[in-house]
Length: 151
Image (cartoon, rainbow, N blue to C red; front, side):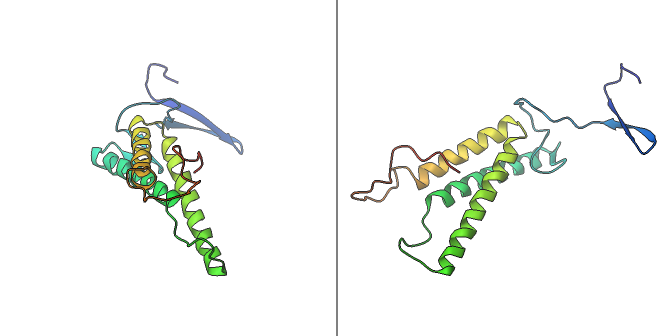
C-alpha cells in the first residue's frame, strides 16, 4: 500500500477472498464550513453550490414547518371522535418525522446546516409563538415566556 497517496484504502474480507477498495468518503465528526457535504442523502448536495443552497432551503423549510406544526392548534379543544384522534395521530407522525429529518440533517456537522436550522426555528418561534403576533388572551396559563423544550 502506498502511504504517500492521499487515497485511503479499506480491506474487505469474507468467504475466503479479500479485496481492496478505495475509500473517498469521509464523515465529519466535528463542525466544518463548506459546501461539499452530504445532507440526508448519499452524495447530496455534492460539490454544487446550487444544490447546497437547495439543501439549506430544505432544512430551513423543514425546521420552520416543524415550529408551525408544534405551535398551531388544528383541532378545537374538547373535540372527541375517531376522526379527531386520527388527525391528531397523523399530525404527531408528521411532526416527529420532520424532527428526526432535521436531526439527521444536523448530523452532517455542516455549520451552514446548523445555522439555517436554528435560524428557521427562531423565525418560526417569532411568528407562531412570540408575543409579537399573539392574540390577547385572558387567563391563559399555557403561554409562558419560554417554549417547552420538546420536539
